[in-house]
Image 1: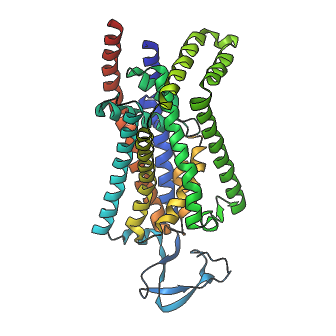
Image 2: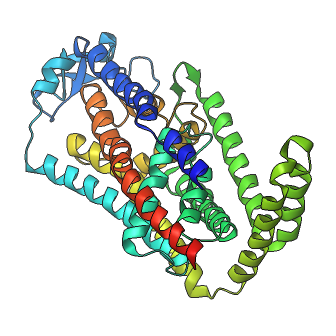
Image 3: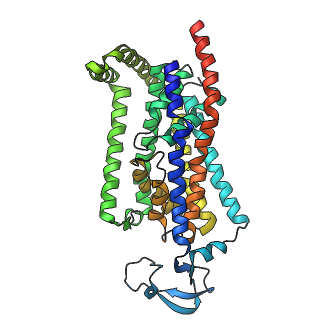
Length: 399
């Protein structure tokens, strides 16, 4: 246990925070600084502008940097100005702060949903305080690891250290992953039907054409479907087969030293699988409802941040675009998609939903609400959590 504690301290150290902080802040500052001196056409209230948009190239897209797209008009709805000038003209009124408050509320709602779900899945094994610390450390580990890797391995250790059996911890991690993927798998076709698939996929992002973007998305979506199927089969239909696969892998000579632990893990998963199969409908309803609440809140955070500066927006369109963008963030090689998320936001939303002068500001606020807090909260929680769980482990050993 002492060795595991040393490993967890190393994995979740302050040094590990430097890279995501630098990447995330650098990307946001790049978006801001690179756009300040840029001059382009900006949409304003009808009648307050000096230009009107005319689709000169018949592409249906407002090309804000192309003068040929705009003609002089006394009652226009566009002005020609610099990004810096337009930022300075932002009216920080009560409407802006109310939308930002709603964005902050969705962050609390998201975390509450996660805490409630983990208490449901573990039959209230964790108190609310313990659930808070587990979720914060889980988010902390996810923020410090590449999105393509995730923080699942650390999450299992966290729950196990709290006293939950290794098999139950593994099963809980699998079920949370299963529900997260199920939410996404169900929500994507639903939103595509309601919002229209043609409008949700960008025509071009980062120089890549729409066909490429669409193909990459469906490839990622297909992978998530296969992953969900694999978890379902392993946990609910073939736990014995899952155990045997683990044994076969760890029978390899370099890994053989852990074979006894793997056998025990496999047995625990089989027991947990049997327990999960006996759960009533209300158990699954509560767990999946909290998943829906958490993930809906997670996506609505950006909706409210955009609404703070853009006013009335197509909420379903923004929500749907985030579902498309999420696949690209999932395969990010950077910790917590740091740097990638900020740039992706500009690629997917600039000049379509978000005016150019607001892109960097929206990116900064969005990430300060949904990413950076977990770095600092996790770093603050970790030492106290290690001290508390050390006492718990010592007590369990003495009994």
